Amino acid sequence: MMKGKTALVTGSTSGIGLGIASEIERLRASLAQKHRINVQYDGADMSKPDAIETMMKSALGQFGAVDVLVNNAGIQHVAPVEEFPVDKWNAIIAINLSAAFHTTRLALPAMKKRGWGRIVNIASAHALVASPFKAAYVCAKHGLAGLTKTVALEAAEHGVTVNAICPGYVWTPLVEKQIPDTAKARGMSEEQVKRDVLLAAQPTKRFVEVEEVAELAAFLASDAAASITGALLSIDGGWTAQ
Image (cartoon, rainbow, N blue to C red):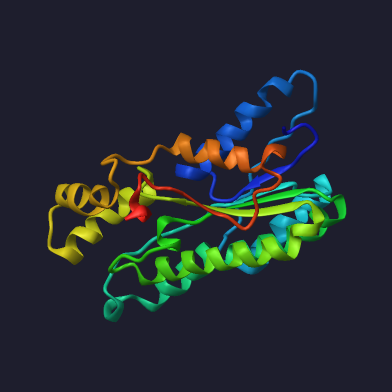
C-alpha cells in the first residue's frame, strides 16, 4: 500500500496518532529492504498556522506530495461553559479543528494533481453527540465532521477520499488526563468517572483499543477504500447507536 507514498500523521507522539503511525510503519515494513524508506519527525506547534504551513511546505518540498494525511492532533479541557477559560477554548478550536483545515488546504493541490490522495480525520463520538462540560471539544469535533464532508465533495472527482473516524473512549493520555477534571465537575471519584461516565456510554463496557482505530485508518488509506468518502465511521462500542 505504502510503496512510493508519503504519509503525514499529526499528533503522532502518543495515543491514537502513535498507533496510526506504527500501523503505517508495520504495513510498509515488508518494503523496507526493497525501497528507500524515510521517516521524519516535525515538532510543529499545531495551534499556529505559520508553523503548520512551514511543516507542510517542508514535506511537500521534500516528497512532492503528502499522499496520506491523517489529522489527529488534539487536546481537551473539561469545565462548565460559564467557567470555561477563553484561552483553552481558543487552543482547542485551533488544534482540534483549524489545524486540520490548514493541513488539508495545503496538501490537497498536490493530491489533486497526482489524482490520488487519502485524508483521514480523527474526529470522535463527540462529532455526532454531545457531553456536558466539553463545549470546545464537541464544537471542534462537530466542525471537523463538517469539514470532512465538504472537502470530500470538493475532491471526489480527483481520486481523493476524505473520511472521519469517530472513536468512543480510547484509553489514551488525552482521556486519562481529563478524568480528574471530569470528577471535579461532576462531584464524583475518578473510578466513578471511568465506570459511570466513560464506559457507561459504551454498551461494550470496554475502552476502544488504539490498534482498532489504527487499523481502520490504514484501511481508509488503502486503494480498497477508494469508494468510501465523506463518511463518518463510528468505532465506539455502540455508543452512538443509542
